[in-house]
Image (cartoon, rainbow, N blue to C red; front, side, top):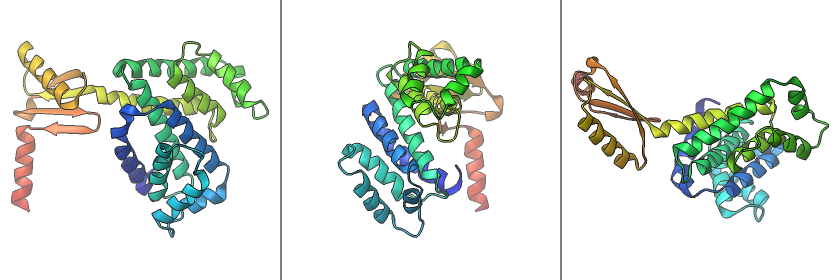
Length: 270
């Protein structure tokens, strides 16, 4: 997914982020259910990604489709997605799948933070490893003639200790791989988990090694700023001249002399 579709997905995910701390697996299941409806109708996908239709028109159409079938929360998420612009007919479904998976991952994060994400990562990775090592399993999980429930039962037996979040993502990958092998879709979900884990890691660049008390102040300040206990990775980079550079996930905080000089040069040149 690229271009306008990537921007649209990023917009929706940014708006969704503040609600994820209270999200539930039930919401994710509803979103996956709406995805199934979209995937079953090419005409509906075309209508909901038609650039000639207004966002309000598309939102009204989807309201008529899912009214009374999902919660207001799920309906709001789907409405926001269809109101955006999508470069390709498939992009809307791909975005909905990623949003639903993000909800599942956020649920794994609730209460346990990075540990919950680590556990989910291990479950998904274990599933991928087991399937990759057995061609018979690969065929069994991809067998179109087999009943979904039978394949799901088999898949979950491969990761007997999987928690609710891991089980839901594996179940979704087996039930609706959407043109991929189930393990390949689980691998995509794993990438989303890895990206979410970056929110718990602060990469800090400084001009000289920190003393213990400096590190403690830095750690306390970053934890207070981001509202969670971060893992702090410190790198010494003399080229910064002075100040500190911090990145957490996609966020960057830069107070280095190099950056300030670059900004000054841009202002003088402008």
